[in-house]
Length: 111
Image: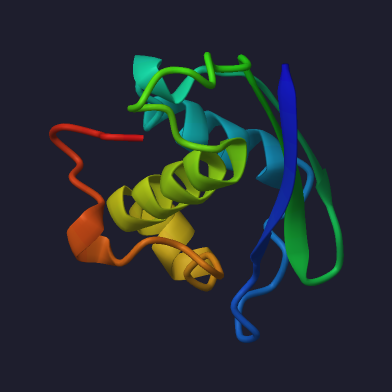
């Protein structure tokens, strides 16, 4: 299993959403997860200006030519969720290091 730590930074003008903010973000990300992401679990915590996330991915077979690194899979999942969710767009800045929106195909996720 591979673990990736990442964050979504809150837009400066947006106050924290409250008690259910982490659960809402985790739910949105699960809604945009594809089977080939290999995601097993997401844990999160709230900070004053961001939501911190831990993604747990199944370890992929390194011999497979189509396998992306856990960091790439996490960045792609965050970008996909941010692009598809009005709530994430409104509340959080685009993920740092995310693939460009043109590279994230919502109909056929490649990550």
